[in-house]
Image 1 (cartoon, rainbow, N blue to C red):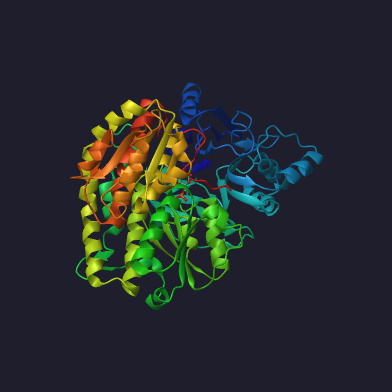
Image 2: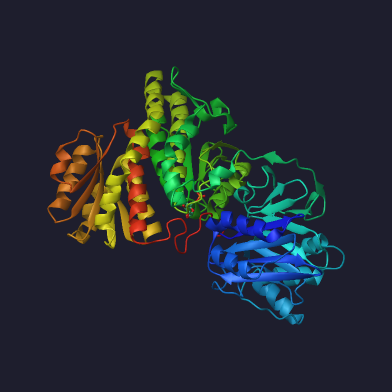
Amino acid sequence: MCGIIGYAGKKPASPLLLEGLRRLEYRGYDSAGMALEEGDHLSTVKTVGKIAVLADTLGRAPMTGTVGVAHTRWATHGIPSHANAHPHLDSEDVIAVVHNGIIENFISLRKWLEGEGIEFRSESDTEVLAHLIRYFFTTTLEDAVQKALREVEGTYGIAVLSSLDPGKIVGARNGSPLVVGVGRGENFIASDVTALLEHTRQVIYLDDREMVVIDSDHVHITNLENVTIERKPEEVLWDVGDVEKGGYGHYMRKEIAEQPRTIRDAYSGRVVEESGMAHLGGLNIPMETLQDLNRVIITACGTSWHAGLIGEYMIEEFSRLPVEVEYASEFRYRNPVVDHNDLVVVISQSGETADTLAAMREAQRHGARAIGICNVVGSTIAREADGGIYTHAGPEIGVASTKAFTSQVTTLTILSLLLGRLRKLSQREGRRIVHALKRLPAQVQSILDSAEQVEAIAKLYYENNNFLYLGRGYNFPVALEGALKLKEISYIHAEGYPAAEMKHGPIALIDKNMPVVFIALKDSAYGKVIGNIQQVVSRGGRIIALATEGDDVIRKFAEHVIYLPATLEPLTPILSVIPLQLLAYFIAVERGCDVDQPRNLAKSVTVE
Ligand code: G6P
């Protein structure tokens, strides 16, 4: 949802900013731009399209300044165009602003500024910021930014540059992430740490309504009332190698392949096989409170919501606590019934999704304790939650979530185990779960090792325009996730359904042109799923089945069978989702789609 970066140092800023934008490109990629201080003025370049277009333009007309800001956009106000691309400048071209977020009162601010004789050049809400800052500029840039932001309603992560007060960049945040990278003789501001890893691992996370001024040698943080805030840098554990493709054609393919490791990282140090127990240090909730809970509410968006559905099945089975799973966007607006006896579990890879964050705040307002299951350390949800569990999956760059999902499900397994052991699960049952969990990385690897089979299936079906995904029980959410993956990256219409519900509607769609992906593992629903498969076969549907190794019966019905190793039923989603991720990936590649940056999507949705 737009990426911003600012650099103040002694090196040429343009290559550094460009590289930072490439790292942030997953946040938005419809247009890009950069502004640098050059001599006593600001030079700006903007292009429509991906960062590569900006790089090309800069290659032909290099810029030389050592202080600058840059932006990659995911349009909210105004089409992707040269005029609407950031940075936005005031009428005298002395203030340049890059912005991630939405200025909600921009219409009234624009009207007021137009009344003052200011002419606007774009449809973007951000342009009002540039004019406002110029309007209030009397002494320093930070003073003008503070005064301007007092007039603004909405969300922002901004970086501002001015030729009237050179050598520095002012950043501020409210609702959109902003992190300061602290270097030697150079400092940075960026939407997230991935843009900074090549230069520094020392970062300071800003909180809402805080501001930072950086130059090459100083970092000074205040709030919008100009009160100084002392905050020490923290060390980021991610490595620059984590944000490279590592020899794979796409980030998504690399991230799928990383899952044996990321699943292990999600449970390591958190489960003990002998005692069949889980330990989650960051929950910050006394064990007695966990024992006395009335209910668990899980809230999230997208793929994280699918992980939540699997969590619902697990928590209910292991602990007998009632669980509700709700889209964050619905939960936040429906005056939910929630109180201090509820545990609210908020799942978000990025930790920045606007609806999920708002849902968490709403739950906290009602007195509930909220724990965050986040991947990005220091993200807003991770910091505002009462406690949390990091998934430790490393940076996920591909817009379609893969390794974050399996890490979320692994983490939810551990939380379910903990709640279960505190309430009704025996030590023996706990041990079985931990034992099965520890076998997962090798099992996932064995599925990845036969990726060519999935690739061959993709080559047969990539021209189809519709797909149906069916599963039951723990694998119903996996059917949803499989369909979502395909939709996101190949633009094929795909629906996920509980297999038995098929006969209440989707069965009308079945003919020889409708591939149906069945998750038909040897679990408690197996016999029923075989029944559902037969209903499809008898109507001419073509079946791709995921089955448990050793199941020969299924070959009679399915045109293609992808075998998975056996595990405990609650853990099957972590295995069954892998071929579905691969299927979506290979189909998208066959169709020539932009796998890592699918059209219209953004990885981190920080607007409503
Ligand atoms: C976007 C992404 C999805 C992600 C969802 C929730 O839609 O494209 O991949 O599942 O946001 O994101 P979160 O960071 O909160 O898990």
